[in-house]
Length: 193
Image (cartoon, rainbow, N blue to C red; front, side, top):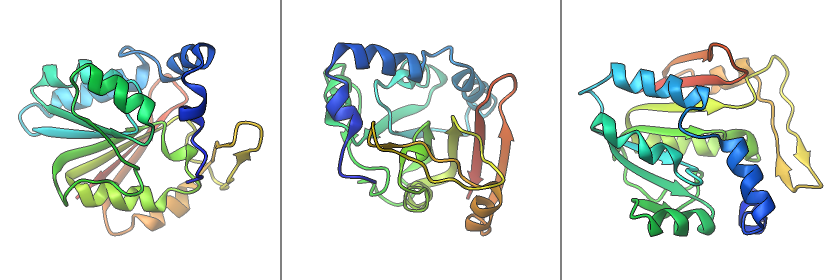
C-alpha cells in the first residue's frame, strides 16, 4: 500500500465525494444485493461481520436488519470520522494490518478494495486471520488470465487486474468459490475456513 492516501486527499473536495459516492453505489448496487441475498440465506448462521474498507459504510444500513452485528474498519480517517459521527462501530485500521483479534468475526468482507492495493496477499492473510467462518471479497475488476499490476501515476492509485490461477494457488489451503455476479462486471470470492 502506498503512503499516499487518495481518499484522504480528495474526498474533502465535494466534487470527489460525489464522484466517489457514485463509484461506491447505494444499498441497491447489484453486488450488494447479491451479498444481501447470500447473507439472508445464511440467517442464524452469521452473528457478526467486519467490513474492511467501509468508506461511507453503506452496508451498515441493511446488515444489522438481518440480525448480524456490523463493525467496520477503514484506512481513511475522513470515512472513520463520518461513520463514528453516525454512531457506527468503525475503527481506523489498514486492511493489511487489521487491529482485531484472531477469528473475532464470523465473516470478514471487503468490496472494491483489493484492486487498489499494491498487492492482495497481506490483506487476504489478515482477513483470513480475523474471520472465524468466511472471507468474502467483491472485485470491481474481475480476475483475469494474465495479471497486471497497474499504478495510475496521475491519481497515485492502483487499478490492478489479478490473475485467477495465481490467486487460487495462493489460497490452495482453503475451500474457495469464485464466480461472476449475474448481470454485472463484478465478481465474488468466498474463502471458507
